[in-house]
Amino acid sequence: MTEGEDMQKILEVKGLKKIFYKNKVPFVAVNQVSFDMVAGECLGLVGESGCGKSTIAKIITHLTPPDAGSVLLDGTETLYKKGKKERELYTKIQMVFQSPQDSFDPRCSLGDGIMESMRNRGFRKAQATERMYELLDMVELEREFALRYPHEVSGGQCQRAAIARALAPEPRLIICDEATSALDVTVQAQMVKLLQRLQKERRLSLLFICHDLALVQALCDRVLVMYKGSIIEQGIPDEVILHPQKEYTKMLVDSAF
Ligand SMILES: Nc1ncnc2c1ncn2[C@@H]1O[C@H](COP(=O)(O)OP(=O)(O)O)[C@@H](O)[C@H]1O
Ligand SMILES: [Mg+2]
Image 1: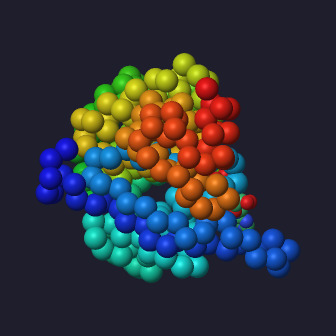
Image 2: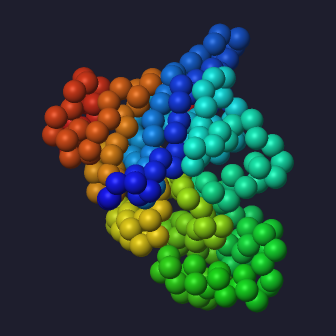
Image 3: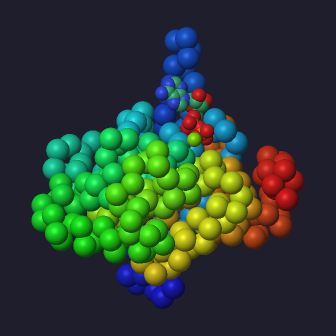
């Protein structure tokens, strides 16, 4: 990457905190989490189940309000925005979930699901359809998949369609929350390849949330290691894997390789 615009920070997360109450006892799920992403970067977020990864994703995408902190997108605060400004944000940040079926309305074809955001933005039917076919090409799905329903395709195929759906509004950032975790190993490898290609070709920024350090190493430029709500270590995946600094990270590396 070159200096200047290319190194522009796309996402700045500062001092995020989230407290949940379990039987009226406060529990800090996310504790003073701060990190940045530059445009075109693929950032991995790893850590065991329950450490707070999805909560961070949900705060960034406004599915959960934080108790403290701020989230800047292209230098502008996104939290506490409402109405039109909030809708604009949704076109800039898209999410792909663990269960691809969750991204789609079971009563709608995949093609209609992919076109939904375009129709909401006022694309004409013909224009949206053409772009939907291009998106299917992009994620390497046959165009006939447009007519299928979520329950009529495999997990991997549905996840490809979910990626096409996420790409439709031309987002700046895609958050994949365990997007490959429910897939079997060979399909997982294909998805990583696809994400890698899309990320390079489209200069997408990708926040790749995953508990599998090996996948993060294959895909990401940088990794954050989370433990019990905090980021305890970060760096280039190869470095972190070769020279883990924290006991927890060592354990994570040992269990992954
Ligand atoms: N809506 C909620 N109400 C209460 N506790 C929650 C809620 N969402 C998540 N938690 C708790 O917060 C912690 C972090 O959850 P989560 O962010 O989903 O972790 P991860 O994605 O890393 O597995 C967990 O202990 C979880 O039980
Ligand atoms: Mg999670």
